[in-house]
Image 1 (cartoon, rainbow over the protein chains, first blue to last red):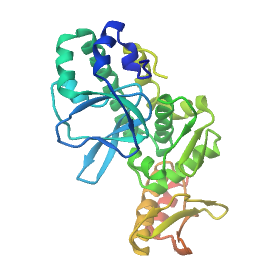
Image 2 (image 1 turned 60 degrees about the vertical axis):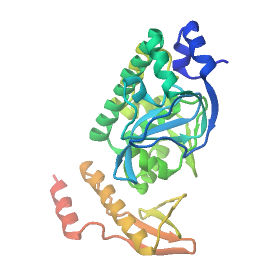
Image 3 (image 1 turned 180 degrees about the horizontal axis):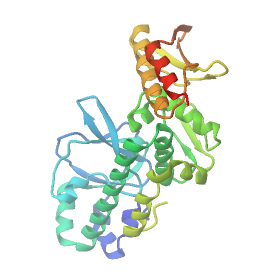
Image 4 (image 1 turned 45 degrees about the horizontal axis):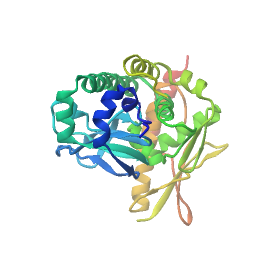
Length: 232
Length: 86
């Protein structure tokens, strides 16, 4: 069992052996809800591929993305923090696969294995840095800059350059109406940074995209590498 | 539910809405375009950009159904334009 998930990879071989017998592999289709608001969290997932989106809800059917986790992270963070539920909604945004472990068992293992607990708590720190920069970006940056940041974050969590996303999804991610996404994609495409076709965005010039994204991109990524290890 | 496309025409080219969205009626599509236009104007005003030449073109499966150009009152736009002059 080789791991693609960066957290599982960063564990010591002994700690990997602790988790390994309890991990269950599953494919996760786009749209699958892993965590529902205010309902007990049953499992912790370690994505091997794909993307999950953490949404802060505004009422029952609206919200904005506040966090992103793929092979860099885990889903079910409240269980690490002695909480059993969250007001957030977490779903699969890009299909992929993940290892999951029973939530109750996971909490027991954390109590007994400080190495696992410490690494995962450092991830919580890295993740909270990501969300604070999402706040910065939402408050200070244009839709174009935020889109650039979002595409980079998504690109970091996969191997190839093609990001399979619809404009509807991007609108939810950025908290704007869909035509604002259409215009922003058009602008980034005009600059030659990306190529956008129906349901698919191809990253063409990564370095230029990073420069364009400005202060929103880079700090959380550096923090992740300092605390955990290689992100991309 | 019918499918509507909100294309954006800036006089020289059309930015195609390739995906479109499901909306209950032409009226709902028009509301969506108006809301979007206000959002685009808000961003443009902050950047001191005039996007007054842009129009939403709402299209259904059968073709174009309406043009939208009254997302903000004309008088407000004229005032903003005057203020941005040196």
